[in-house]
Image (tube, rainbow, N blue to C red; front, top):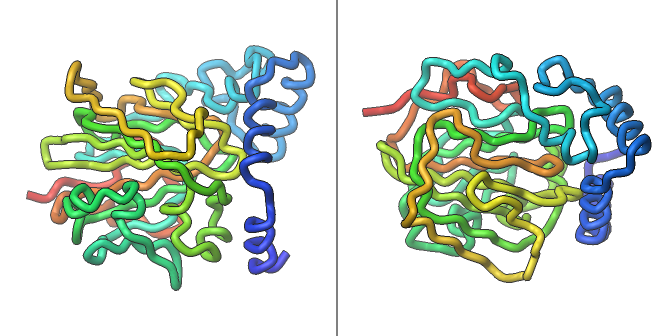
Length: 282
């Protein structure tokens, strides 16, 4: 299918309704039917179940139990690096934030202010900073981990669209990651603030964090803000911080001069959680 048709179909698709239906099925406990769907999914996408803490498909009561499966303790060793890759997936884009503009794909960029829910003061902290956009495909491990140690300050649930976030849509939908529903997690680290943004997508039933649980639904249609000044929520480098119930994209932001990316990184390159993402500057 030509890309322009695939993108046009995204605009026409009743994305909210499809997502609600997919979420309901993914949470349902349907016995043999659930296990048959999981088997088909594993075969279709080449999921490596030997890495899973529980490799037996029959052990998963729902599709979401399988989709958010834990890995064996030794499956993702942590590199000796200041910043770790937080997910399994592919590099969509990474590099410098040009004033407040984040590169999405050829011909498309979006602002840090839009991504962060319209907060101009917060966006200013990342002016001329650095970003990384990482895409999780259906076959990937869908838990999200900390690239470095941090103390949670705020979480913001921003309502929005539910376009697919695959590479075709990223090339065809302007401002995609700042248009879709997202959960913005803001941390203090030893090298300044860090934003870790979970971006929703078509059939992403919900996103969850370890401190809150499932964030969406509900989807009230307004921005929701959660403050975490006390008691503190502190996570170490490599700790799990959240998960996608069905898959999507993570966008990370840092202030100017925070890190130098791994020289082996390149757009479209495959990455795994725990690999070296970069080293600290200064």
